Length: 464
Picture (cartoon, rainbow, N blue to C red):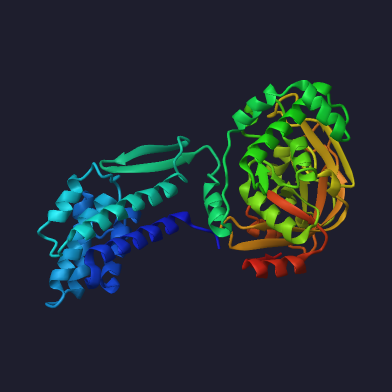
């Protein structure tokens, strides 16, 4: 099931304010009374659902909705308690949208002195309330950073008096930060962010002689790459390695290498090869942290050759063709159950030791610097298993497939791509289940091993 962060946020709000009522009410706390009132508050506050659409003031609308909720449950025995709970909701609405610090005591003073709240608030309770509010704002901020961006636009069109059509427009990809939050929570690890601009500035400071010496020691197959471009690629590796060594205990590394390519004189393809082959650290392209943690877990558990590529099912049609600047997919039987695997001009990056063919070439994509490089590589043809964690870190999708051949489109963004066939004739199901065009390909038919691994980690599995 897809993760709905809006639903999770409202669950978080309810859980936090239940805790707030526990602090204030103490031994008088009854969840069965507060639950329906909080549900009503969330329905009005967050979903704009109301029986009183003509009441435009939020607090007044909440008052009317909550009065309807408490009428059936109020009795002579609980009337004073319910009225106190009801009175607290005007403060709940305030606390849910304002920042509280020790210097902003006005609303808290009103709250602590409110005669409508028939609850004795001791100094200890007051302190607990203040501590709660500070922690609450810190937790809210973590959610807010997932959505905060200057790249959203709210456009309005007036239909008639007091009636507008609002359109939310977005010109960037949805932030992947929720996935990062889930990764840290699920695996008790820390994702450390460093400036890609600063890393590249450091690379430029490294002497050519140092880079040339390391290249002489570790030279890899290359065709048509100028010496200047080779040295830039080596220096980027050296700068990345410095960050890894300074950070310590690094299990995986990646960068937003395409979308932030304007910071760089090259691409990190050679760096990722040496990071894996010499430093034994997993890599990921394009800052894809879900791919990074997936590859780390998969390789640690299975020790099988793997790599990430863009997967373009033939069923996608023109969108894939246009993206790779090719005219047609290969003319084959059963196209609905085939896909093209291509990334950054070739099959995609994989370390030398995983490949039957591997050579460093000049860049293909227009977005990157003219000195950039890319790897033209091939894994062996035959059975593969595609596998990747879902972004909520609770399950893994497994797709049984096969590399049938490699296909070339000279002059395109697919100079050498993999022709992939789904072994179970599952093309349409893949279209429904594939969560990302970034697919991890693992050599061999290893579904049974992945299922056993998932049991150890507690992941659910979907085999396609």
